[in-house]
Image (cartoon, rainbow, N blue to C red; front, side, top):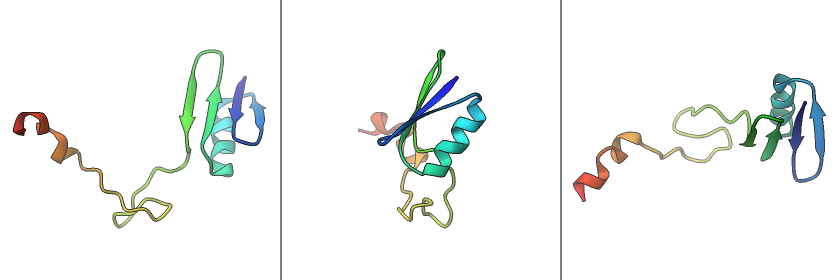
Length: 73
């Protein structure tokens, strides 16, 4: 059993796939709980197009600038 917990309600699903689809459809920060694990986040936000996230915010994270940053200081 998987529970999707949002700000306003809690709903149960029989599979993780169904729980994740529901979490994507409500488009808000949720917690998905099962007996074995717990996940949190906004599901479905997984692409950057033309330097912008799906909500229009500029994507600025750059791994290359962080590698070795502590050594350069």
